[in-house]
Image (cartoon, rainbow, N blue to C red; front, top):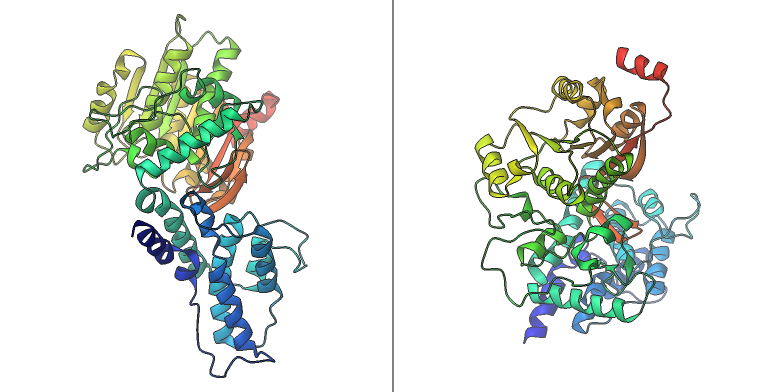
Length: 460
């Protein structure tokens, strides 16, 4: 009975069932030679049969499709002849987006020379089956919902924890060069090596790893740096409830450390800024500015990490939180609960993060070690109008819908790119597949800019 329920859940939430109809509109009997309609129907039936979302279900004993079969189906979509009429093309276009998601999940999506139909790639499928931007976004959002469903609805707590435990045992048992491997649920049997800074900081990479709990915590959970969070939904939800596996594990009582996701790259940016500050031997305080801070998700992590890194040193840290929506009372409450006022000097601004405000703070502090910016679409205006970002050493931006324009401004201000991930895309990173919702631009200020260029930028 339990297996039947799982199969029903899988059937209801698979990509083909959402993106295209399995049987549709052929008026004639499908016998040799096959008509356009019958061939299209066969193609969509193969799509449903090979639905590679099952790859995530091998843990439950279901059969995983052969990537070669998925790749061949993708090529058949690309090579399917036109001429069946607009209704058929619209149907196949919808199905092509299911094909695209399947090919990714089956590791059958590749990049090849443009202009051929012999390579299964996002670019080729979208050229063969064009779609309006509005419809394209609707499928992107639907795909995002389906991917996250595995975490929050279908896969139960004990199943995710069991997969994590099995992954840890497997990767440690293989005696790989780096036994501290990153668990990526999209490829749960692969031992991805962590980024070197994550390896140095993550509790899961220490000799005594955190114990996987048998039941949810009875007290308020903490993250891997010791920050306490509220996992239940409130009037102003804690960022901890956002859909990131690292945060979900912490709410389940397991501060395992960063796992691949958007948070992973934000964590690398944060730890990189701290590492650069420490290595520079700077005789000044570490300064972080979080624009769009809410209750200070990244500010608190910065304060906790700074105190661990700078233990015994005379320097302090300064943390600046800017948010126009989150009540200052909520910020103060969260900071106080985590004793952040004992760790760093805190400045709160309950207003919009504008270029004039940010520039004024840069001038006041002289130099900003880390600027974390997530102001829900206001990033582009800030970068265009700011004149003092040359005094920001490291920056991490959530790009939302203005990625290309932000990259141009990012480079104009003298930043060298560390990360460049477009929003609403699945990307194969060094740590396995990651779905980027907001998009990321991160980088550091280049040191070889001449004083003349600096003065020109600030005067423009």
